[in-house]
Length: 434
Image 1 (cartoon, rainbow, N blue to C red):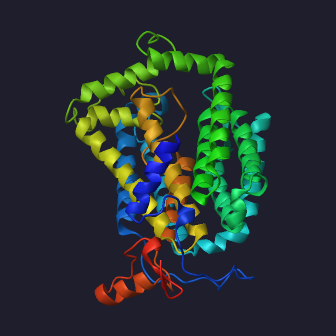
Image 2 (cartoon, rainbow, N blue to C red):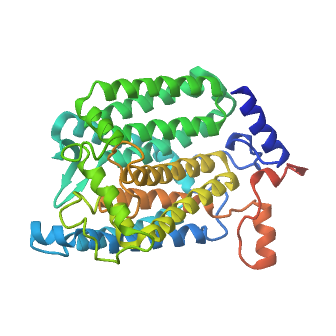
Image 3 (tube, one colour):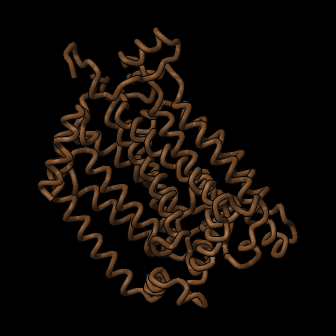
């Protein structure tokens, strides 16, 4: 392990790129202002256009695929083939302005709202954990608000990112101590994860833990304690799986889906059949056979299987490429952010969207045991779409070049388009070379 870390560090030194966000030198920025307004560098340019274009395309694509995957089921159950299409279109119509508004309001204004957001999220999770939530599929994960259902676990992931970014950006050198830099974050992570497990929502609990460990590493916390906690968490996860009959059935179905096709492996087996039926170019939009009551919940967690059947390998490859680009651009935004707070927000949102996407795809292809994670922007679901749109709005916000960014100002003069052109590690800081 030591040799691997030395090799990675040597490669980053050779390329003059930092290994972690905490290693990126940054230009001086003002301390937090006592009021909500002023005191921070103002944005002087637009958000990342590539990120924005990809997200808009995914949201539009999600509306189309929701209709394609759900029309037959909606006609049979609700006597209206457009039932899910109309709802998803409404959610998309709300999500777009939410994303735009969040991307335009200075992300530093969220700092004083960190604890209120976290507190409200915990209250919602406790409400659901106590059994007052709406139940479906053997889990009570939703709060019914009229005809719509809100899933607090989705909000909890973003709330955790906001709190971690706020906390880690304040600690600086203290992040390398266990008592100050690691323990408080582990306690909050553990509490939120336990509330998710109480629903039960194992997938969201794991996602909160992974995001926490990634941000701790990015902030410069010592690798030894993080690795110890990861191994301890993995051991606890194994115990939780072994002690739960329904989770064990999912593992058995993952290992042999066609051997358990009549019970726990049915959904995964039908999903794999859908991917295989699509071939290279698919059977065509709207012509899926698996959505004809063979694949349950085809418009939610397993919508990627319908995409694979109708658009084939080419469609899935383009879908994967879209999420790869989101991750790449998100990491780029994190390293170019004006301050540590923005960097941690960018890393957290990127991991949140990227991990959910690739986990969902891996589940549908039978590569990992079944988890209750949606495909961001594409799967049917209002709360997930709104939360993902708000999270992406944060990432777009951080991507905007700001006053004091000498690289962005220089490029604005040359091209008339104010945007950053080099990682923070290459900027001139306080008159000296970075």
